[in-house]
Length: 323
Image (cartoon, rainbow, N blue to C red; front, side, top):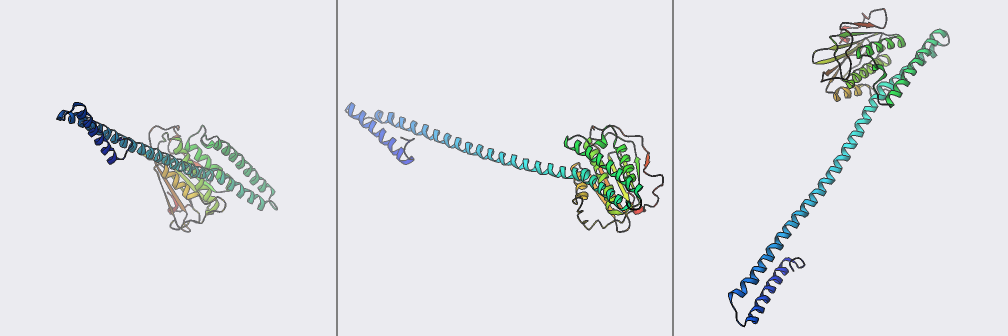
């Protein structure tokens, strides 16, 4: 009765049943006594108590079921949000990688082919040199693309150190674009995590690409320094410079990801990136990364080594542009 009827109706039905039982006992005995009332009353009380307890347990079970459903839905929403965030982060990472590798390489090829086109009418030998450099850049970018798709480390870091990769970058940039680029190594190299080496190499590649494409510089310097608890990368040039307070106009050829990608790389690894520049006074870029725990890299060369892409020293870089 208590299960099937509403609360008040159920209690009334139980009371009526108990009263009927008392009346039945009295009719059967032919007399009325307290004992005839106590039994049915206790039975009714126990029945009410049991049902009330059961209903309380049922309500608690329903509350917990709804709570579990809400938690399950919340977890599903959280998983979707985390998945979306992961997808966006991966897209941003891929955009940075493509900008700092394939886009920069294609831009370099475009510059070399333009130079070859200008030199072709009167200087076929110079044009052939530009075409050869563009072909080599295409080969290097094809290797980058294949390794990028395979999700392995950059070819520039395969079997070599970060210092050697930066020195080679300076040499190839100087050879391809007729700009004097020097590399300095300060401090005793220590092993770095592969993601740290990749970030520093990509920043150097992007910075030199900006120097070649926008700065109209005749000289540049890259300095890699190991400063105790951090590693420093400084890139400077003697180009036209710009006002860092003003956002540079997006590059229609590369998509305008350069400076934003550099900052994002440093921020993702707990590092910092600062830029000093002024119109007509060159540009200096400083990247700093904290040295973490055990790394995947291999120790670099001995400290104090300087590499030069040309035999002529870059003495004309202004002090303001040096790191």
